[in-house]
Amino acid sequence: MTIRVGIVGATGYTALEVARLLLAHPEAELVAATSRAEEGTSIAEIHPELAGRCEVAIESLDPASLAKKCDVVMCCLPHGASAETCKELVAEGVRVIDFSADFRLSDQVTYEKWYGVEHPWPERIGSTVYGLPEFFAEQIRQADLVANPGCYPTSAILPLAPLIANQLIEATDIIVDSKSGVSGAGRSAKVATLYCEVNESIAAYGVGCHRHQPEMADLVQRIGGQEISLLFTPHLTPMDRGILSTIYVRPRNIHAAEVMACWRKQYADSPFVNAVDHLPATKHVSGTNYVQMSARDAGDRIVLVSAIDNLTKGASGAAIQNMNVMFGLEQTTGL
Image (tube, rainbow, N blue to C red; front, side):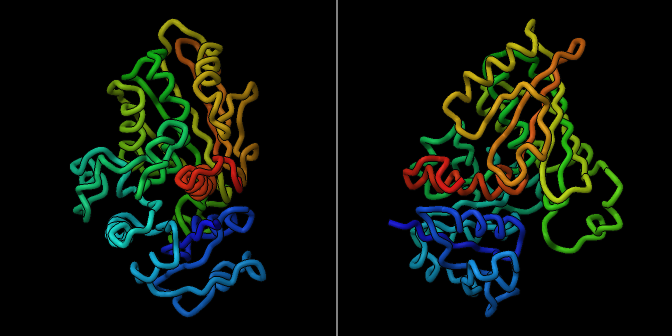
């Protein structure tokens, strides 16, 4: 049976990436898409890349109608608005993969502190499965709602969590320095992401206050079993897509070789996570759902380097991977 997929919030880059990936998926099909601003058009009119390949009509959001058409809905709305829509969709009996941060964190207080809004569905904070199949596949398989991971957190959680779980590094001294392509800022017009602002430039932003910092710490703590202290600084770089995270940790009497061995053991059955001998670059994973990670000794620290595509493993590819798990398919199907 073909998995019927719907997209809520069809105008953004993540929605385009979902549609693109579904075109190559042998067991799933995009059957519905919604947008408040673009009702009455087709998804190909919003995203010309899909012309001649996908002509799904854009409709207004009606959770009951969408639930009848779909087996799973990808909710690509901003935080706050997304939680309300997810609540309505789940109530209608359709499974949901949420791209926002509304269900990623463990507690309501942390969410409301960092996102500045009252949570519309607090009962699901801390009880929604985090969509990282490398650690939570069994829970994802049964879930009615999955919190798709943030892009920056994915690039940090995957290298850090096994090291914390195995007590190979100091938990209270972790620095994550990340560089992202401009697509990570979304498709809506903003002065900071105009061509003349980003071209031939690189800039730090959200220093000490980026909302992905608590997500990184929360998930590494959940998986690793101990409290950590983490400093995160993101940077905007003049490229379309990709994230490169350089992570500085203090080892506990180990070297980079032991880090690589830990990763290879942890991710032996994870098809998209590769511990590589070379230093990863964003071009090595562009357009794919793969993660490349490597480690180097550096004085009294070890430097971890990870690369992902922010639109694929950092968003839409992860959602397809989660969908595959939810419906009993191989994780790699269509990816």
